[in-house]
Length: 284
Image 1 (cartoon, helix red, strand yellow):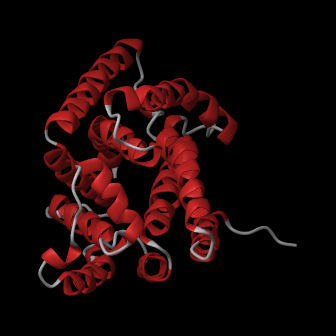
Image 2 (cartoon, rainbow, N blue to C red; image 1 turned 180 degrees about the vertical axis):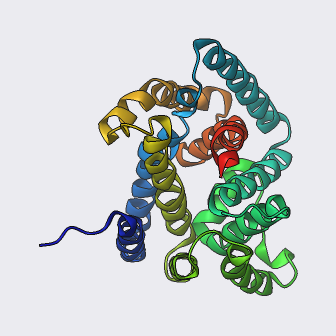
């Protein structure tokens, strides 16, 4: 049997995992939540634990590690003092980071396109009317979030769907067929799977797996790293993050383990998105 061309590997992974995500939506809620948490822990967090390997010298790594620790400390402090503000900043930064990674263009409006696309993806994937999302937000914020308070909420999600298809097309360097397939998969999973599963699929597969797969070649263009090398390289910072999550309830006693994962992600996303943009995405 002929091997599948390398350029089609990503499309196969996206498609197969999208189908799995939709079927996972039929599983009991506690099972689905457990699978989502496990996937975020095993792929979502480690993909940001490779950042220091993008630095070429020990001095650069030490400098970036210091910046990481300061950023993480500031994020945790803001979570403690102003959770609503921190959640807002986390969502804005996540939207920018997702768009920064997915929008492939040198157009002068790229920053705006990236933020618009990332925000549209989040709005499409995260339905505030989903009970599980409501529980997570209430745990993080300390009060319930009522989606009915947002005027024309359903219309906003329709607009988000249009932007998910349209924004990447602006002066894109990627074939339009690939962009269309990507948009269809995101829309399909968002509409057919519960929000937590839909977000986990996008974050773990379309973002984290794609980033790690690209980093294998970026770190060493001559001899790309194997997945085993990536896992070993990501292990130290990943373990430190897991330890932090483990002791997190001492600082955030009202937060469950799933919400704690999102707090950890928010703490890592700020320095990660900064470094990723400057060193990796900035090269596109």
